[in-house]
Amino acid sequence: MFDLDAHLAGLDERLLALPEGRRALTELDPLLFALLYLPHHLRAQETSEQITFSEAHYEWCELAQRYVAPISAFAPGDLRDAIIAPRGLGKSTWWFLIFPMWMAAHGHRSFLAAFANSDTQATDHLGTFKREIETNALLRHDFPKLCAPARRPSGVSISDSQRMYIAESGFVFTGRGIDSQVLGLKIGSRRPDHIILDDIEGTEGNYSANQKVSRLKTLVSGILPMNNKASVTMAGTVAIPGAIIDDIAAKQRGEQYPEWVDDERFTPRYFDVIQTDEHGNERSLWPERWSMGWINEARKTRAFQSQMRNDPMAADTAFWTGEDFVYRADLPIVRQLLSIDPAVTTKAKSDFTALAVIGATLPGPDRVCVVRFAQQVKIPPGEKLRLRVLEILNEYPDITGVVVETNQGGDTWLAILHDLPVKVRTVHQDRPKEVRAGSLLAKYQRGRVVHERRLHQLEAQMLKFPLDAHDDLVDAVGTGVEVFLKTDAPPQRASAREGAA
Picture 1 (tube, helix red, strand yellow):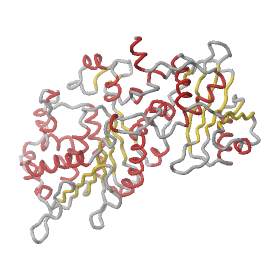
Picture 2 (cartoon, helix red, strand yellow):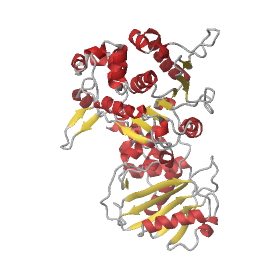
Picture 3 (cartoon, rainbow, N blue to C red):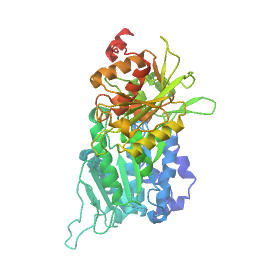
């Protein structure tokens, strides 16, 4: 347990007794700022109203100390962090209240723009900030210009509303829902120099793949361009596989992840509720809140894996679940092919071109397919696609054939994929997508299809099927697997499997 008195005892009491001293001591120390000015936000019923800290909180304070330097000292995108952590760790308290208050009080940032899943959530956060500057006696005493709203000569506040606060010091804090109109947000010639994104995807039950596409566009095209040098903090918990925060988490996990993560220069900061040392010993990320006894009782539940460990494979779906994926890199592959589900255009709303490398063991009743590679890309149906295919053939030299689904474009694909070093075969699918996916899932459940490693794009698409906006990778893998394995019986549904258990 953190000993507040002991921590403060190491400081000069003469400085602690004066506003100038408190300001000097906390200017570079957000943790001490929280202890002096906001200790009531560090206590909670879950920790018996005691002030305790997780190792994550200390690391967050170190990250926040970078904000002492002005944004002009950094290149665009240098300060973009994604805090991926369990629910209940205090992400909103620290990143939406404590750090903004510290930055505002000491002038480290002058214009904060915060976005949440909804307008109500954003205004609630801003309301908490405003209640502190209105009622916190010590804060008002030490930082009077922050705690007084800016006023016009007539005495009327310039802006002191549910969505925006402008202080006498010049500090601006605005809070909005992620779906609000945000393009060009500025006050006069000033633009935000710090952007906060707090749980912008909400919960699994209230978030869809189409919303993800829309919000990612808002983030990349609307919010981040408000000031490309602004420091940015995104905090959240994985809502669904392939969600915005999961795209960034995939980079941390060492899996395939979308190009936008690197394009926008987000750095994942992942905090698992279960910490493991070099000897394999486990400990809680915040033992005063989550004991290992409680963790061990809850760790097998889907909710724990999803909400506490940010495991996208814990999502509940109509077809695939995380349990259907098995990873094997040791099987003796004797044949392999490249399966392509091509798109006829590269328009924004068109499908992707999906490419999957499928290997297979020796023929027979125990034959197993191994998905070695799966990627979806926007490539025009021409020479660029052919060059990408040649790259994959070079990377996997044991591929002996290419299979292309020709439901769209017909035999045009044979002309596009000309002069390949392997034979090209076309396939026309006449069964509905759900039937083909069900047949593929049956093979997964019977151990006939495994993955060589985690394949983020493919697995996220399977977990969301049939609700995702795109299912091209599911089709590509299904087509490739059917070359090696005969059609299986329909799979058992999740309820049937659970009932059998």
